[in-house]
Length: 369
Image 1 (cartoon, one colour):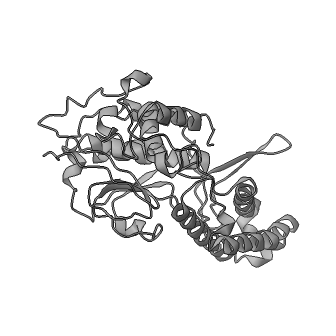
Image 2 (cartoon, helix red, strand yellow):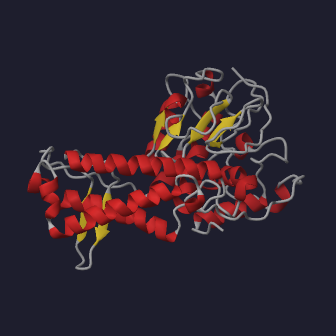
Image 3 (cartoon, helix red, strand yellow):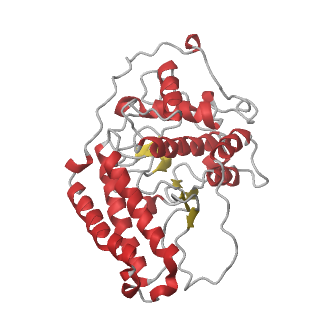
């Protein structure tokens, strides 16, 4: 099956999804991957990967590169003060209680939870406080900032509930080198609930994930589609694929028309790639298209940019060019196909050129503005 070429449409709000012509505003970051005419076979897409392309390779861009945008002040957003008040309350309540040991009288399992459990909770709060101090949100999209605040408020409330109920904490794997040279390791498990002595899994080295993404070919699995291959690429970056846009709407709620998209990333749930199997305009047929793998790579690129810059639309790109930045990052660092991701319309927000390549290199090195 093949799809005719669709135009990219500019989105004025939030996440990242592949969007086809006729779609409304997404409050998620919307990734649009061009659907090029495909007449039989997938070999024409194999090896169509760019590592670097000189300026002369690009057709002329009909739009000038927009200047870097100013980041949004999250404190001025509607829920900014609520988030800050919640974070301060949690820190003022639990930091002294954990340091003094009074925390154990507040928990159902008492001292059986152990110091690692309660200090993991404290370190997560400290990490979020650090993000607030140095810039909780560095992007240029108001809807994304609002979704991020919604997600953090929900997360902090749930984390406190888990602590007071003695449940395992929903936290990332934590390793912190302490002043005496020892390494604190925590994963949020309450030892009073867990008797397993199995060692914690070793975190995957980031460059291993980059190289793995580049190594996955455009060859479908035995079932004829790329679902398993896409999940493998996502897993190498510690991400999962969720096949329900309805669930995405529980976290990134600004904008409801996802009918024309084929994939999305939501900043409020940064470890998840959303694929709209419950919006059947393009699925399940799209799973068998080679460009599906680059949909996954594009969404991973959004996650990486968000992780490095606290936004999918950092000031270096702004709202006008962040999708082009994301495409360039997916091509230059994740092994995506330039031909599959480059729009036919050079005025598209998803257009790649020398400037978006430079942005991608800058972001990869940690420069977001």
